Image (tube, rainbow, N blue to C red; front, side, top):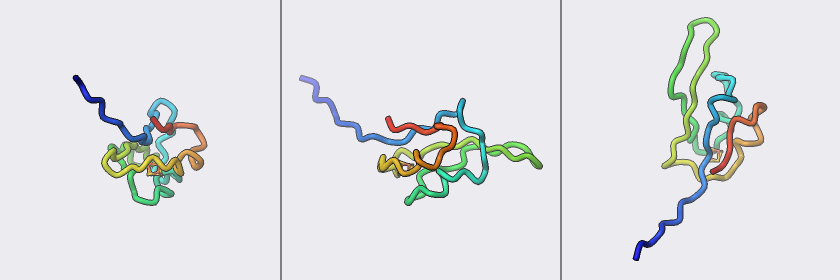
Length: 75
Ligand code: SF4
């Protein structure tokens, strides 16, 4: 018999919605720094690609309220 492991909820960045702001408020508000810059592009008009460290994220949902583009969801 297969035992299913309960997976805890974590934040997920929706890159198609994210505006790539290098000063992302959601990244700055995360109490444990679970949102990181994965990739940085451009010299003058800098854009970033963000990712969530699945090992750190507690799924608290605080970052959701700071994203103006609804680019984060808890899954
Ligand atoms: S859900 Fe909480 S812990 Fe996870 S990235 Fe958002 S603010 Fe950080």
